[in-house]
Image (cartoon, rainbow over the protein chains, first blue to last red):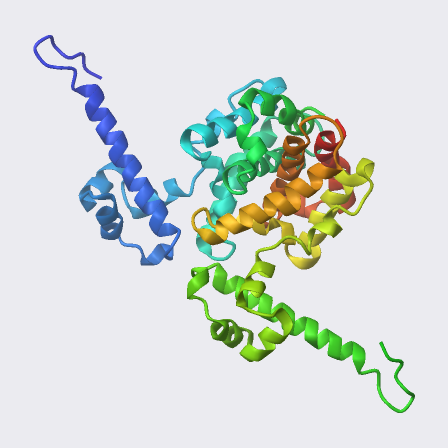
Length: 195
Length: 195
């Protein structure tokens, strides 16, 4: 980070925004292709064409094709925000996180697991990542017996809320205030965290 | 139902089983094609070919193509079992229903909503059916205010359990005894039914 001199406009922020937008476009393109083709059949050039960038730019931002795909199939970048609350308030925080994700961004990144293909390598990688990066990470926060199972049950409740909002599109749920839903639904998550 | 004489083998039951198996194959074929093509582009012959039956047999069992597709996209046949318990025990019953469906049949029919296409007519029909045949039907059973919202929240928890079991394939959940899961998870459903 450099401080722009008085003579030059503050170009750093817009440039960084452009880089973020380009990275997001590349990730979107990779996600789109991974949902439709086998991992091995997708070329860097196909991702670049779809994202409207050059293959070398992808290499610059992500290193190589495998690193890019690992990033698309990872929950690593999304979980810190999801779990960013004290344990006693974590149920409310996670429910709010899913609802805000749905209302403001159309989905929560953690909900990508719902669209995991039931067969094939990509689905298996997503599932393994989800278990390690979401389930296990939450379980580490929990005290008492059966932390692994309790973490999965808490995450179950969250996933279901996302499905009802984003896929089933429940009319009552979508009409309710986020605070109202948090008040009603968070206890169903919290009971697994601090039973 | 006729009582077979001693001279003839009891042929009625196997014949009925064959008819059920054929109907199931036709429904599977229709479901497969509907997941991949627009409603209007699917011919009766395509369904028949895929099911390994003749088009007239489909007409015999289902009447016409639209009736067949309506059946595939309906939850009408599945909901009575799901809701077949007194209100005070309905949370436990529904959780057990989803878990037994997953372990014995690979999925619960109600979970088809999770795979509803996000765009297009078929997804919208599934969503409308799900709301009317599952959400509204459950809401009718509930006393007190906000029955519609509470029904959607109860169903959210159920859908999430199905997703965690069948799609995310949580290892702890799949290793646990059904009774244990029912004991732990049903209160998160019941709290919306009888708050």
